[in-house]
Image (tube, rainbow, N blue to C red):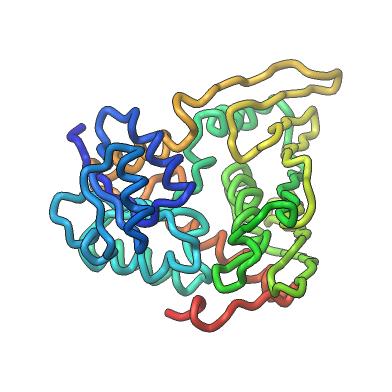
Length: 331
């Protein structure tokens, strides 16, 4: 595999995790970062030995030395920024959630295919080898037939000094940022889209969903249910319940590196697959492999699945009355 030059758009905390992971890559090199803040961009570049700093996103996407751009900004900016990158001929690894609404991600996936470019939603969980091993165990029938999946994900963010999750102009709330994970993992394990969705949620004074509870029924007759919260500290575990046992993904289940398998009598196996770096390395390497192969997306997380996740969250938003401002919903 040839070396690929990466650019980062937005040097926030998630970009720092990305930078740590790519620093260990044999084939990926972080060569540029773009930030509206000169100070933040320079600080990021100094910490992670990035040779080029741009204060304009346009300058980054027009850099002829950049092969692929990792978009690490809040998701309210994902649609216009990903569109900017694709129109400039750049491959894109797009931090989750891909967009605010279904129409936005549909436009982006179509654009990527038209321009023969790689566009990948960066739901890191979907690329982790432990999740692949869990799927393998389920397919082998170790817990019998899946009956339902249940999970919680949430933190008491009100105790933190500041959080973008409380800003509706950034697409804040529990659903898009946290609820995406149980949807994405359920989608991976069940291999289908729900045909019935039931949701309840509390939209607070900040006009974000503080806590949301969702039941999803699938055509196969199986279920997945989850709670996501921006105000409650949850156990943050997932359990896949089967007819002959269950599999528990311990906290934090989306950072999947361990799973416990139980039969009718108790614990029978623990899968323990520590990350090589921090968990981001798998999606980085998979992105480069797919680009080399001329693919528009990874089979581990397809465009149809990214669209399906946003469709589910659109339906949940409608049921709980969660609306964002027209500016971030725009096409």
